[in-house]
Image (cartoon, rainbow over all chains, first blue to last red; front, side):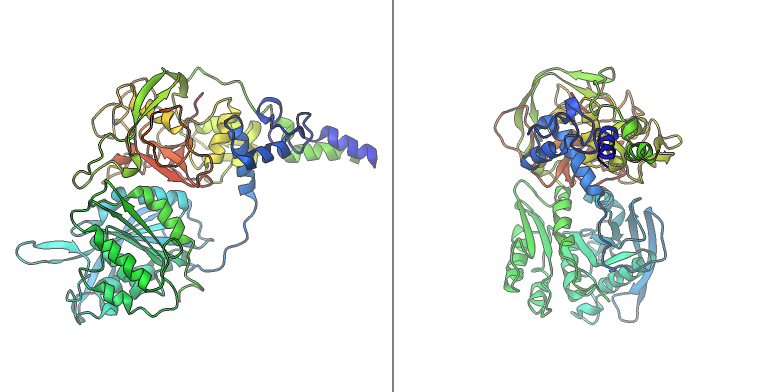
Length: 336
Length: 269
């Protein structure tokens, strides 16, 4: 038996274990003396303490090896859609209009990364533009295609309602966020945009294997206000919100939030520039105030990025932080 | 007989028998020398502009950075080079199904027509390991930015003008310049930096060595971002990126284990 072990040690690849002559001396000599993995215990100890410049590559290799370890199968929170295209595509669906009897054709654009795997439930992030902003400008403006590629989620850019704001403004794209925008006034469940987004989630769920526990509403300005509305009016479908320069005070939705009696603390991320000339910074402070009155705790249930030197702009450098935070707080049990 | 076969099989299963020493002698022939310099890193203006403002507050404050001479790859690492690394040292841990690399009889081969494309679908870990194997390292953020902005500190590698599809492969906001990345150097010389580095704006974005952190306003010599940050910095924008992300000072944090079809890398020395 012993000769066999000796032969194995001699013939095994140098990088397979601590068989390198430089190993076990407390120094990671990987780069100069050995092949990958040969000096593993010394190198792993060094990498655990820090990533010294001389062995960044070695530490990176061990991190990559660790990442290959099979993950346990994810919980079955998916919608098991039958399959849809990858890349950027656009579609339409029917949703109610401002009057109860009215049905409209609503438009949307969707981005599905090449890495989409129909076997795995995939999160959905919806992006709602600000007043008058067309959906086609949002992918570049928000930089969310990059974040979606890196993180493997689907992005939907729903088009706003196109309606007449009267003679001084005319026909524009706008979300229905004021209680008088539709009939019956103030019935949030019957808000035309709530109906549109509800239908859109269902439509995409039928096409893709959406992770029902990770459906995020995000938006900028008026769209940010709408994202908060969606999180509170559709808490069974929308997991949380990302509000960039948003508000709930001007339209009185702060009172509606305070009436929220659900058991779940709805996670949110707020990003707002202190120099915003259009939606005052105090509007996001008001959202924070309401969240805290609802028992939410900053850092646990919501994040607030208050940014100096920033006016009325989406801040893509916080896409990753925001979505990491929201994806870490999935809807318990999944949506119906 | 069994005693003789077993170690051979073990070696073959691990691929060790075909792999050479981990660290190669660096090939400097396709690298560009960036002369020692002191430059202003970050965006110079702190007052917010009108709508559509391109720079982001994470690029602030501008601060003085001094760097010694260094070399940077003229091109993004290609699929062919990455396949060689996989065969020589990297192996399965650094291979991903979506890379443009096929596996044939245990060998990694560039997919048809992909050899000269920049490698993408690589994590930070893959990129840093490749560069170590190549006898190099990933560039720091400061080295990357200095290379992209040139000695004059220009907003884009080619100068002041906003990008066109003749200069870079990116997303204009209306159209994609191309369906995917082009072979490296495909926008040369129009898109080159002052010192002749290719594709620093667009094509694929690029991992840097540094962890993401806020800038300090203090002058710095050869700064390094923290290795403990949750995010590593990606620079340069890719074929899905908006024009603003192609600016030399634009920065984005990404999780080091993540891979993307528009993120690759180049090495420095």
